[in-house]
Amino acid sequence: MKKTNKKTYVYKMNLIPANVLSIAILILCSVLAIFFGINIFQFNNWFLVFLLMILYLMLHELIHGVGYFLGGTKRKYITYGIELEKGIFYAMAYSKLTKKNILISLQMPFMVIGVITFIIGIIFNIPILVFLSIVNISGASMDLAMFIYFLRLPKDFTYSESGNPDEFVIISGEDLTKKKSIFLKQVEVRDYNEKDFEFNNLKKIKITKISIIILILFLLLGLITTILSKV
Image 1 (spheres, rainbow, N blue to C red):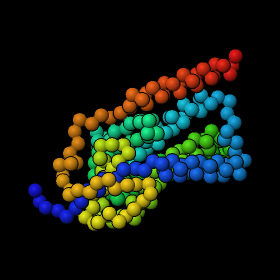
Image 2 (cartoon, rainbow, N blue to C red):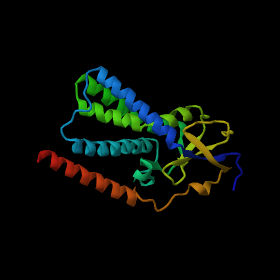
Image 3 (cartoon, rainbow, N blue to C red):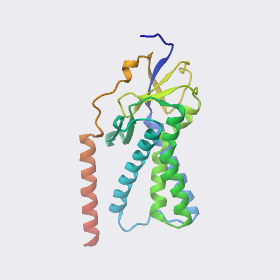
Image 4 (tube, rainbow, N blue to C red):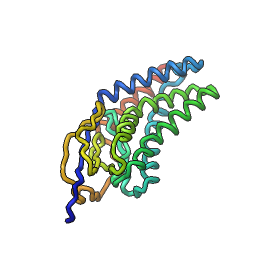
């Protein structure tokens, strides 16, 4: 095998500061919506709102997948999943993406069904669209943190998956050990090995058992609440 000076940096997402940022964005966007006269908390059917939130978050990940596909990842190497025990909906690209590719994918959901739909909802006074846009924008806190961090990295770095939804790897010939972020932690640095990025037998959709239980409980709770509200 041809020797290379490249290193593989394994990063783990630090979800605590990401969640704090998410809450801060949620509050800021809510105040902004109220400032423009949009009542985003007055809905007759919160069960329906919950279902729309779930679908919107799934759409968020599908748009990430579109970004990966446009960046050159074949569809068979793009997987989707839900791990509610970690508060995660995810799309993963088992491919090696350039800096440009990953930056495009990271910002697409934030812009398309976040910023743009928020502005449309404000202009046309559509509270549910504004509400869903705010949920999406706040839920994109880690995307934003990664986007800002990747802007600081060398142009020639390569992004790929580690196999865990809250981890990823960066391949670079430059030393990244001094590139710090409160949202990301370098958990391993090793020599680059091409064989580490040979992915086979990938499941297209992964939903943990705990996620299924949580979704069922929320759906049942929503149905019961809706029925009781009409009695």
